[in-house]
Structures are given as C-alpha cells and as structure tokens.
Image (cartoon, rainbow, N blue to C red; front, side):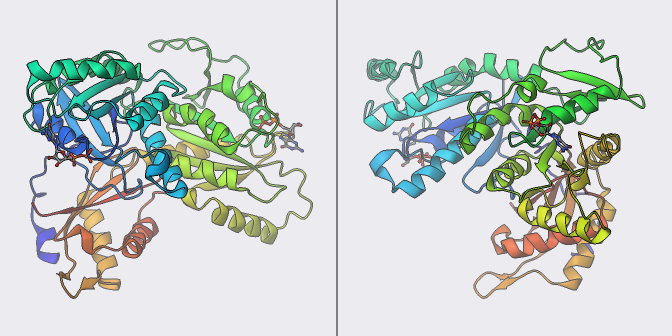
Length: 470
Ligand code: GDP
Ligand code: GDP
C-alpha cells in the first residue's frame, strides 16, 4: 500500500461516475433463469466502452447490481433486480424481501425491462410480475424482452404470446446471440431521455433541492411555513427553471432553496394512520428529487419504526440529511444533558443517518428554524465534496496501520493498493484492492468510521466500493 500510494498517478480506471441518481436507471426484472444477467451483460457491452462499472456497491443492498451502459449516445445504468419470485416459489418471508428489493429498484428507475423466456412461453409467474408492473403507482414504461429467441423468424410468433401480459409489444431477443437487443434498447430511449432532462447533474446545480420528510403530525407543514416565511416574497419564477406548482422556493443569504413536492407536505393524508408502506411510497418521489432531506421527528415522543424506515430510505438513496427534532418548545427540562440524551436516542433509532446533524427546533415558536438553512448548506457542501486523492490515501493508510485488514487462511491477506474518490453526491470512495471479498462488513464499517473521523462528511452518506485487480 505504501509503495503504491506513492505512485504519481492513479491506476488507469474506466470508472467515471458511480453516484446514485447521476444517470437514469433501468430496472431489469423477471423470474430466475430467464436470462436477465446474460442480457444485462450483453447490453452493457453492446454500445459501449464503459461497460460494467459497479458490481458491488456497499451501502446499497447486495442483491441489486448496477451496471453502466451507453446506447444511442445516452448514458444510463441497469439494475439487475435478481430473480423475482412470487407465491409458492419462495417462503413468505423471503418473498417480502425480494419484492421489496424489486420495488426499491423500480422506484429509482425511469423504465423497466421485463425479461421472459421465449422457449417456455408465458408462465403464471410472468403474469404475476406483469400485473405487479402494471399496478406500479407511477408511470413506468416497461419493455417486454422475450429472451432465448435465437431463431428470430420462427420464434417471433412465440414471442407474440406475451402480448397477453398487457405491457405492449413483446420484443424477441437473445442475450446469448445478441439479436433483438438493439430493439430492446431503442424502445427504452424515450424513457431515458425523459429522465435525463429531469435529473440534471445534481452536483453542478447552484440551488439546493430540499425534501421534507416525516411521519404524519410531526409538524412538517408548520415547519414548511416557517421556512418559507423567512422571506415574504416567495420566488415563483426563477429564470432557467420551469415553474412547478408542487415546489416552493426561498432565497436566504443569496442562496436558493427549493422545497420539492410541497404539495405532498401540505396535503393531509387521507387515511388517519397510513401504513408504513403507503407512507414510504408517497415520500419516495420527493426523496428522489432532493439533494437533501429534512427528516422531521417529534422530539416529545420516542422515535418509531416509521422514522427508522424513512432514515433507511434517505441513506439508501444517497441523499444528504439534516434531522429536525421538532416541538422542542414542549420539552420541559432542557438542560445540556437532556439534549445530549435525546440526541443519543435519535442517533441510535435513526442509525442509517447517524451521520446527520440534529437540530432541536420548534415550528410553533420558530426557535432555531433559521439555523436550519446553514445546516442544509453544510450538509450539501459535504455531499458535493471531493477529497484529494493524496489526503484520502493518507487517512486510509493511517486506518490500515491502526487496524490491519482481515486475512483469510485460504485467500491470504487483504491488501489495499490505492484509494480515490471518483464521484460526489454522495461521495463515493473506491478502494483498489487485491480481493474485495476479503473485506468484512465489520472492517468496512471501521474504515468508514476512520474516514469520517478525519474528513468532513457530516450530513452525507458515503459509499465505499471495493474493486479487485482485473
Ligand atoms: P437470470 O437468472 O435471469 O439472470 O438468468 P441467466 O442470465 O443466469 O441465464 C440463465 C440460463 O439461461 C443460463 O444457462 C444462460 O446460459 C441461459 N440463457 C441466457 N440467455 C439466453 C439466450 O438468449 N438463449 C439461450 N438459449 N439461453 C440463454
Ligand atoms: P404534519 O402532518 O407533519 O405536516 O404536521 P403539522 O405541521 O400539520 O402539525 C401537526 C400538529 O403538531 C399541529 O397541531 C401543529 O400545531 C403541531 N405542531 C407542529 N409543530 C409544532 C411545534 O414545534 N410545537 C408544538 N407545540 N406543536 C407543533
């Protein structure tokens, strides 16, 4: 490590950006063994020199594999959701998790490819997955790829059977031979273009998109009024941006803050006690559009599982975060000690965003509400921060000396050769190493802790990616 880090230049890397949300994402779904990964590999080679990039992105759930692709001059990413199982093919617990995985993948995608097996014809499970996709809460273009159709002419007829999934024209293709793959990619382009326009590069933006998230009745809409009340004249038309009825903006100290999906905050939940699923679902859109999420909790009650689920969401999506412990006016004994205690409880309960700053505020009295803007600025600056390679390597070298990486009897000692941060929003740190499988989760957590001790990443998640020698 010492030798290598002294080298003048970074090792050649095709790696460009791995930041979540930087490019549109396409989810690949389908039952196991229909050829999803074969097809994804083919697509990621098909039009591009920058093929597969991120195979293992810690912090994001293991079962989702991201690969970078280029087609028709557009960059996008594919997520292989792993096999989607339904009903009796998996036991109930497992099923939940897989569906959740697929839902997560779909929620961050601008389109989906449903892969089916043209040799077998439509199965019951294909139909269930089709129904699942048709019911997806927002507009989600789906392309049905009928795989394993090597003999296009004779098999096109078979592919037509998949019309009955109700997802439009099925496209016959073969991941192995490559025929039809271009047609599948072409069919995705309109959705990719739409998403590219919406998700202009976050890191380069001058303004900050802020989402307000929290359980019902924690005080989100009262807080929003406070935040917007900072400046009487709400910016309704900003040059170069489209006017969006669901967003409201405010300029503080010359900085523009845009609260996204304020309609969603103001709209009172129709049901008294929405299920966690419904609540998280509603918030997904706002989180996706935000640079930073203000996670509002009620400081007068114990944090709940719903609060934790929202925190999880923010971290998984790689957004910056500030926690607002609201209704602090009600709290009776406000000593430094009691504040510290509540902070500790919150940090534990909201573990996925334990790196976030916590502010004790009151929408009612306005206490500390003005300070929220400065906290947002700090977190977003860190979210967009790029640490110099030399500094990063120094920090990691110290961490390695302090506690060497694990060794395995069969595979030998783990070695890190070089560390760099190829992307921001959120900061993504790539460890070039001999063998990524040697790094235990425990050790990854240790490295993250050491990095956070030395580098200013408060308010932002960071991603650690381990890449082996090729
Ligand atoms: P996944 O589980 O959906 O990701 O499926 P895989 O990509 O692992 O493929 C499952 C099996 O189908 C493998 O044995 C592949 O070789 C085979 N397979 C994948 N694509 C094709 C194809 O286009 N034609 C044929 N004949 N076999 C394929
Ligand atoms: P939302 O559902 O998260 O948007 O919550 P609201 O903003 O509608 O607030 C829910 C309730 O909490 C209302 O009755 C508010 O008056 C009250 N509330 C909100 N913020 C505060 C606060 O800082 N202190 C106190 N005491 N009450 C608050």
